[in-house]
Length: 109
Ligand code: SF4
Ligand code: SF4
Image (cartoon, rainbow, N blue to C red):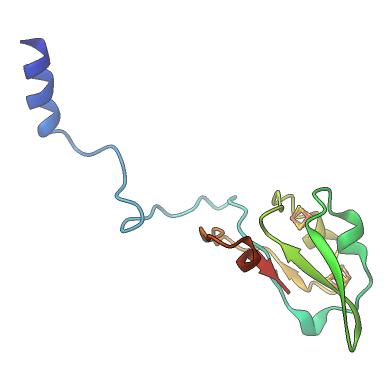
């Protein structure tokens, strides 16, 4: 009998969960999201890939020299690279990393 009472009561209660992804709660102001990279600002100093504790930044070469490639599947969102970049080429954001089947889609370059 108690079970039936609980079921009926819960039918009229306000939902405690969110219907994700149709409904999304706003991230708190301190939320650390995926990195953005403005390649034109980068001077290839290498500080970001030297400081990254998760080895999530790989150096790749182009016609201008070495440039970072960010592997967001390894990133721990410590933002050390954001702090250390002398050109402010790496940007913090509040965007969540998308769910992907192929982790190469989580590369930022
Ligand atoms: S936020 Fe931290 S873990 Fe992620 S790429 Fe930058 S230094 Fe590496
Ligand atoms: S620290 Fe900044 S300027 Fe230096 S290589 Fe990384 S992104 Fe480029």
